[in-house]
Image (cartoon, rainbow, N blue to C red):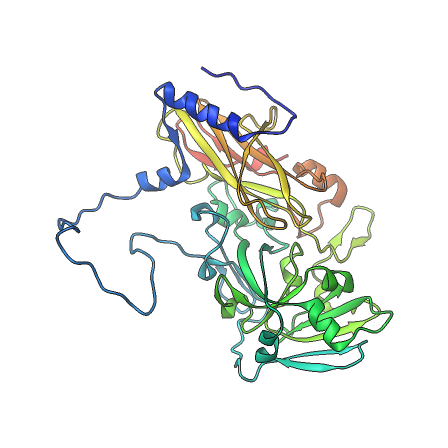
Length: 423
């Protein structure tokens, strides 16, 4: 039996492959998330042989197999509601557009693309209105990146409507990754001419809440986009059709959907959403405002509740890691509640400000175990424990819960959320 050793050095694919080979040569089988899903799917009871009967013909619009049952989890169907992505059931890093999480403040508006206009005014030389056709005439750019709600995981932290019987989707499903297509905001800034002294801009939505957020001009010049495409098609109405603001790495609420107005100024606008909401009370009775960047975070999606490990042996622990600061450079996995950490394998592609898949080969011997993961990004920032997070930010905030998550494996192979193990 191979003995594992903790290491602080970098991890190479060769080491991971050697583990796989050792398991195979020893007569063991490696169980993966995909294999687990197949094993829990009832066998096809149809008597017809598909090789003897012609299948259905072509259609104008494709559909999923009737044997696949993927859907978002709707928490609040009201205008100020949300639905969560089934992250434990997805493959790769791209979230299908119809499964991208939702978060709304005033419901989903219906906007005619032919009458759509984006106004840019304020501290600029030439105020202009851009139609959707105007936006599409500018040089087109695409970017694969995640969007995460800043309140992702808050109910887990406060144990609100949460028990140990919770799926990854219910815990952290307010995150999704897409390929976004549109025009760089810097291109539009050059088109209207930014005056000296411009430090901030206001992004305003067309929804019933008139969602508004102040954004630093540096972000606008760096990598902000006005996007009208998602995963090869027009963005969905839930994601801001016909156009939204994309701010890679920033908290989701700043990436204003159904964008109708941008106002450039020399100071932040101190709107309702960035004063009464989306601010972080600190232990010293002050508040952290404009906490834009989503810090490094990771989550094991397999094995997780409600899956039950059917037998001992080799299992492939899988999950996601991401950071709004840049690329993920390292993910470590612990199977004993954080006493020992081992480097996981990062699955390509590893992109900046994007979800990254990780894998770790684990030999479960039938005892209790506490599964954890922690991520590090290219700035050197490492995902904290809950205690480390509370020491810095206190217990009064509702946002940016990027602390280490835990899954508890019982002797019978059942899994549940390790609420008491996240300390």
